[in-house]
Image 1 (spheres, helix red, strand yellow):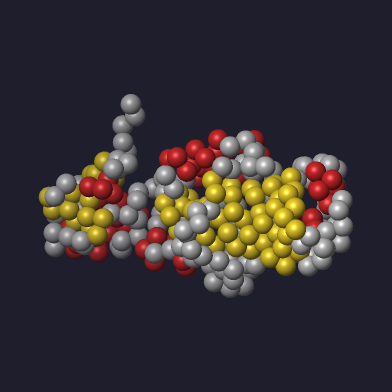
Image 2: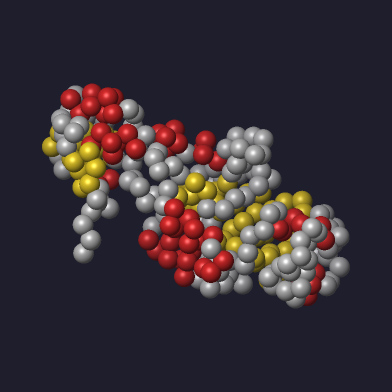
Length: 249
């Protein structure tokens, strides 16, 4: 059994965004940091960073934020971005302000563009991030697509062929699974994540995407009760669902 890492109390809480080390020291002296029911008044003391620490420590009357290793699902609404390269408010603004000061920082696992809504994962665990986005993991993503014009009828065959080339690229797309809901609404499952892939695929087919929503990553489906703009901490079962599902066709 591996030993839990330990950190000085002031560094632990500073890394979680609670303030500077000096500010943490003041909280400690005031008796506002409590572990297992006992105040911690020495900000220099080392604390074992165990998985259950959030349930044992209270800071200024509130349970401690989750320590590093945090992973979230967020229902991304339209109009917010995952990158400073796009104009508009960032998805990080939907999270508690303190979480935006965490070190290591939270990052999105992949991206959704400003005009795409749906399931977005975030984590401060670099190994998890790279595992999910690695082609070796074959984590599929499912999107619900609204189209400007009716389907012609051959789109599913072309997308599933594994031979489709996008404009400006010389490597064919991996086969895409497509389910038709009606003449202007489809569900597609991708096994790779190229830039604006869904929009570019349908543009190449002579159509235009008018709405795009991601509702599943691996075997993890966006919960019906998670409203746009809301987030939820992922459980171990959620993470297994993301990584263990070979396909979401």
